[in-house]
Image 1 (cartoon, rainbow, N blue to C red):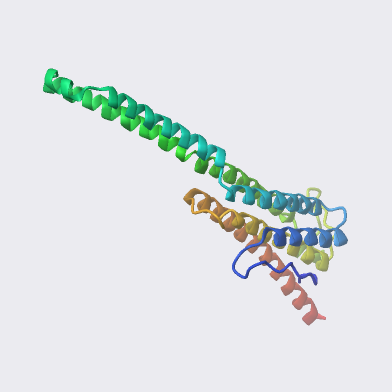
Image 2 (image 1 turned 180 degrees about the vertical axis):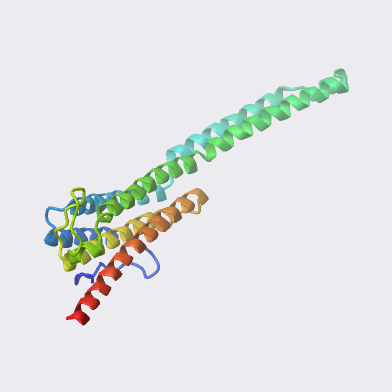
Length: 250
């Protein structure tokens, strides 16, 4: 049921290309505008294309190391190690071992070990700050894509394929339905395509990371888009069956 529109060919057969996804979204918006120029769906598609461009830039930025943060963490770690070495070098360990009783020595060693552990935890916190920062940015972007999936689903929610036949009288609370069977099929198809492309944008974030939280969030968006798309295709199948039934009746 799709219009004759070939998406851009990806750079690699096994790698998603952000530019190709954005180009496909732009072309999809043109197709929606051509059939439904005043629909809210074309505006959503335009916003999704803009989000796709932001996703492309964000993925590229996340793939680059944060040199300043790594340098800061390394500088602090080096300063701490140098300070510890200086302090330890000034201590007369032989004199301490002669004067201190075993209980006091054990207590001092315990305090020193705790200090080392706390300092090590602080250094580890700095060294992993880049991962946490990138994870936070990625999860916020994936949350936005998840919201897009729900908005797309809202646009097709009241599109009832059985109402196309017009045999049931509408009520005062019924939504306005002016689409023909062909137009409704195209509208639903556009929604399904937008959901699929939303999942592709989410998958871009999983291409260059092995972060379990990010991978889980990407899978959630893909599962959501797949489940919502499956409901749309059920409506499209109902339209096809109605079309076949009408042809046989004729």
